[in-house]
Length: 220
Length: 220
DNA sequence: AGCATAAGTTACAGATCGGTAACATCCGGT
DNA sequence: ACCGGATGTTACCGATCTGTAACTTATGCT
Image (tube, rainbow over all chains, first blue to last red; front, side):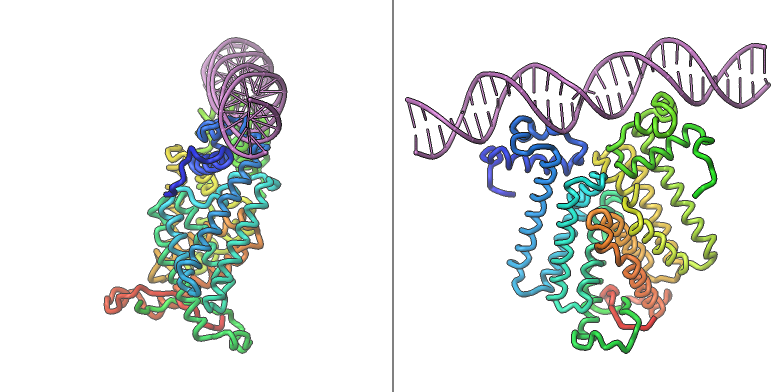
């Protein structure tokens, strides 16, 4: 995928890449530092000189994951500049790749499940990441002209998070198989309401009932 | 919650209850059989006489979880007999309790994340359970007169699974906070379409586009 | 009372875990 | 050429893990 040779990297980067791969494959608690160091072509002593503890290594890996996500968001903007709706659809598509194609879901969410202790230092990184992702998605929805942008962002967040974990528990033929069509339908629904009820008429306050989703047969 | 005294139970049941509690609190890989046996008021030897291995104990615990789910479904039918739509709303409500109130999500999904190895014997139990839950939900949707029952079931499945894991990764103030309103809105949307497009007109085949969700301002 | 079975006790085996100490070696910059 | 920091090597520590052996005690049934 990338042209960089594994052997030319410095130990620190080799360790992080290897750790991420092994954590993903066997779970964080399922792999020891010995294995990571060996698989990274180095030794445990060097690993501990770069990362003071396994927890530190875990945190470094999660920050690396966050960096990958940043790159993906940048790619959205680069591929569809000034077209937030197209970026939103790209978000669904990329999410589906990770949810249906990949067998092991979201590294952050998996870490949150595995590191059960509520005071684990990695929890800060995870929660910060998830909050950031949620804000970015809401901002994107707002830019795309969605009136209830926050609600759409949360709906899509739950759907993607659900698809990625459902892939692991219910299998690839389970509910996650319909993630794309469901996500697209939800976006279409929120977009249609936003056309009928543009921003300046939003807080009219005449009707008290919150907007409800409605299914209608429409041609694509 | 239950009147049964812990001390009056037989070792096997005490072990399972204790194991479920500890697995939930610290993760499956985060607690050893020694701790389980001691906390259950017995010893490791007795544990191994009842369960040949830790994996066997894990499987027994997951089957116990499945039993609890059976009881909840029975309770739906008992509380709202012959009212599938009311049962569907109860499903959302109970799901929210588990997703928002409880900090540790679905035991089955957590186990699927923790037991990363693809050939782990517990995976059969998990996948079977998730498939069964999905089928029951789809059946309930069908009984409630939903035309696209399977799609609604999968949507709700993804939302609940997502809410339960998002509670752990993004925190209780994250997207999971809106699970109930989102779920209710989705149910309302599918129900409205089902009224407009009853079963005998479903497969007319004139319009090729699949039904899309649409948001409309309606009073409750 | 007697007997089979279940349960408790103690000690241990073998492996792996995270983490460290002491020392040898390599490699880049001046 | 030299020197300092980064890296590699080996051996080790104490703790914990799953799982077992051998033996004693309690319990329930006839």
